[in-house]
Length: 110
Image 1: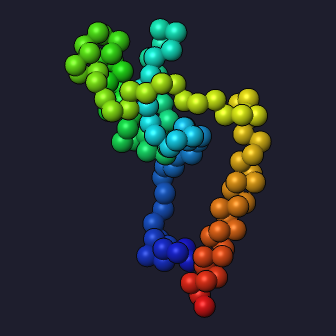
Image 2: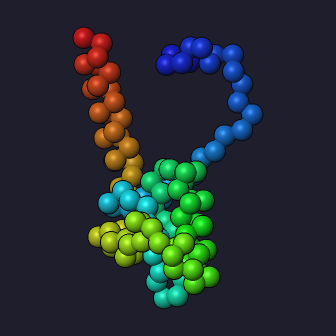
């Protein structure tokens, strides 16, 4: 409540947590690989992008090329070296961002 004291008496009834799909270039994309159409890489903005790209994917599957057209129709995401589905590097990245936050807070308090 330090950051948002006005929310001290607000009680949450629902919350969401989970993995966030990100592409290395930080762009959502619609692509087809081996006959499967993918809408992926929403980079934490899935509430906005998923319905929109999902609709484009549906039009692509139905053969409606004009309605399927999007600026996010790319090739599949690039391969990530040394990554095989286990994000072993994330704890270090999270600590790094935490350190950046602490430094920014320290500088702001001076």
